[in-house]
Length: 254
Ligand SMILES: NC(=O)c1ccc[n+]([C@@H]2O[C@H](COP(=O)([O-])OP(=O)(O)OC[C@H]3O[C@@H](n4cnc5c(N)ncnc54)[C@H](O)[C@@H]3O)[C@@H](O)[C@H]2O)c1
Image 1 (spheres, rainbow, N blue to C red):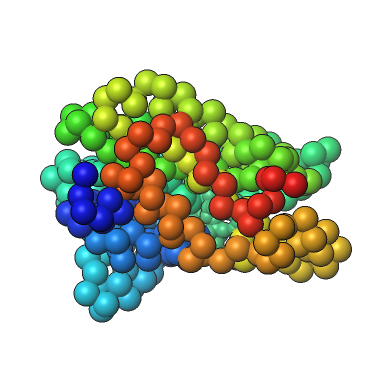
Image 2 (image 1 turned 120 degrees about the vertical axis):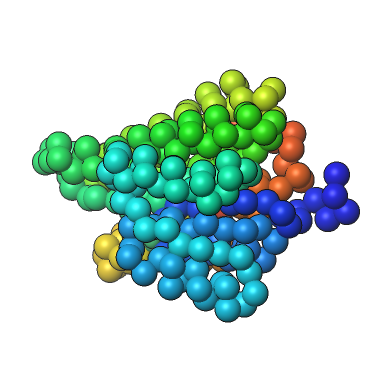
């Protein structure tokens, strides 16, 4: 094991949904730990965001891809493979969306969108990464689940279904891949102050109801994700397989 088991120097990491929010916070953690990061996002200015890291002396590049689209995902995989010469060490499957409707009126078109990005794309990229990682004998796959993987929400039936799925997908992949040198784990953020939650923050009743339930008495920030992702991406977690690590200010313990 390295002198600093959290050191990611020499590792190649791909992180999706890195333009803003939790993905941005985790990209920062991975870069500061020494990894070369490829930041993927549907936002066309993702490489401008990566340039902020380059200006600080880190190795970062941004690739624009709509992960809801299967063809875009295929092109992205080819591009990353050629950029990294097949040497993918870390995948953080973070991109996700929320669409809110009552369960009685949830349109099937919106259900399909949430499932495609939050669950199918997670599986598709994890499967691709796993094949690359098995061929080199090691790797770390980190999926972003949610406290909604365990405790469901309201008006969020598709989202909660995907996050429950991400947890089981993580555990199943770990069952098959742990003996092949690939660790598959997930992080479950709690209520974090990012754009995905604008509707919740603007609903004062629900906001205060949720805030009161958080033992840490505050919503999380993107930088709160950095330690967890670096740990699961590093040698320090080599014997950690198929876990869900909550980063939730204690929400799930209540
Ligand atoms: N914020 C929270 O409270 C919270 C809680 C639990 C889990 N999560 C999960 O964390 C992850 C990140 O959430 P966030 O709060 O940072 O959200 P966010 O909306 O702030 O950021 C999501 C990022 O994903 C990108 N993205 C959206 N659709 C995409 C697509 N089709 N292709 C590629 N990129 C796309 C966005 O451009 C954005 O940069 C999600 O999986 C979310 O479900 C968030």
